[in-house]
Length: 495
Ligand SMILES: Nc1ncnc2c1ncn2[C@@H]1O[C@H](COP(=O)(O)OP(=O)(O)OP(=O)(O)O)[C@@H](O)[C@H]1O
Ligand SMILES: [Mg+2]
Image: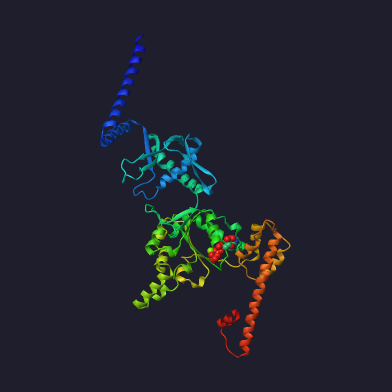
């Protein structure tokens, strides 16, 4: 009877001393053994333990290979765990989320969470390994972060198949929902730090414009929105017809008619990033291609005032029959005009629809111009710029949207007078908006409407005076018996 406690005590003593000896040996190895020997010891202990363990482990590393880009799988898992871990994990970290007004939680380093899928239990751990070597003494230690998934080997097939598929799909959706949208620029004003890999700099994109606040004919607005939404939902369609998943928009019209505003509204509608490409700051076609490759999907690449960016209007046409000297001179002129940029029309065409432009998919390319007639037809032909949108002077429907935005008015007795005047004179939405904007806290809606009526009346008087002057010139030229061309009439009228 006394044997049992004595055996138990002996057993505990033996176990205790074994663990103590093991720890002692391990402490000595850690203290005195060279790094290589330690690694060797760790490796074999690990192999023996893995052999007897019924669990399988999968690691998903943040960076793979060239370390240039975060691994897509890691980003997706991060998204998936940000939602799933925030319910169960005890140590969380918080980062600023979408629109800078909410915090997104995710599991902290070395935290472990459990997940269940079709009755199978799995465990996720966020971990990091610190690289033993540093390229230079003053470089910070390189941390390699990774997630480790552990599950029982009897679920191998289901976890490596259906479960991981589910994690990646859901994680990507969560990332898109939570992401801070960005406005990128390649502007030369920013000095790139030498270690920086990317040629774009960015800020958070927070433009408030939406199609709801845009002054535009309702039918036109509806058509544009439908076109954009159809594009964003057509991944399979583009794949089936063998076309890269991108679409070009040409926005043209006089200054102040809402071209730039529409780009912001497009980005807000589709939840896309915006790449504002300053073409004059691009050194040459190679640099243009590099910039393109660095853009991500779900984005709008914008080239504003394309007619001013480069001499893209005649270069290609002239080149064919010209002598070498002429060609050289022409190239020099183009270079001077466009701030040392050597981007050519063919470089730009390749940028839009060359092989590289298909990398990544789901991208809109938008050009804006005030002078559509100045552009080379090759640049804006259908297929390159698929949709041409003219933004023009403000109509009564457009005015009503602005009155609602600026004054919260849906109707007013002065609307009829404004409608009448708008049929007679051209006014840009920017001018309407400026007049409707209260200039002091005492300005009420009626005062703003009167300000607009006054502006419209002044514009009408100006137009009438111009028309009268033109008529006078015509009469004079007829009296004098001379023949005057249209241009000459316009010149005299403006005098
Ligand atoms: N269609 C519109 N709807 C609502 N607001 C507009 C519209 N057009 C212009 N605006 C207002 O006028 C301002 C100037 O418009 P925007 O910069 O979009 O014009 P633009 O066509 O890009 O001009 P530019 O050709 O000079 O670049 C905007 O800040 C916006 O408030
Ligand atoms: Mg603009």
